[in-house]
Length: 133
Image 1 (cartoon, rainbow, N blue to C red):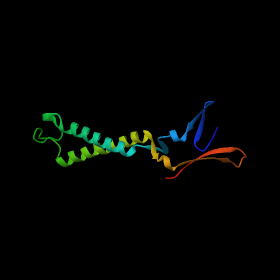
Image 2: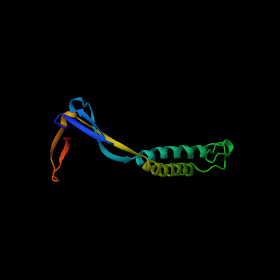
Image 3: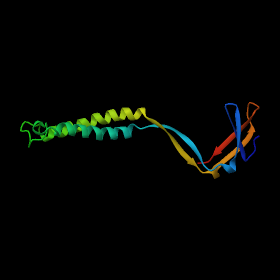
């Protein structure tokens, strides 16, 4: 069933053999990663945009447009509140991004793949794949 150029995979009671010469691509998993940094970046942009929209809209009742509202806040206060909106968005985005995970895969050149069959310590035979990176 096994040879140096064939591998057999058994899944749910069904065994399927594959010739290594038919193998065109191999990928190995490098583990899962979160997207907290990307989430923080997107959250920051959304937070700044939302804060800017709230602070600078409203015409004569605008909180930050001094030309339309004489009682508007100073530009320093408006910049601070806009930045605060960005930081709040970044925090929320980082939390959401940390909950989103994806698998990282790396291509392995086929010429670096080696297949071996040999005795194990338990007395059984084992199939081994070796990949050089």
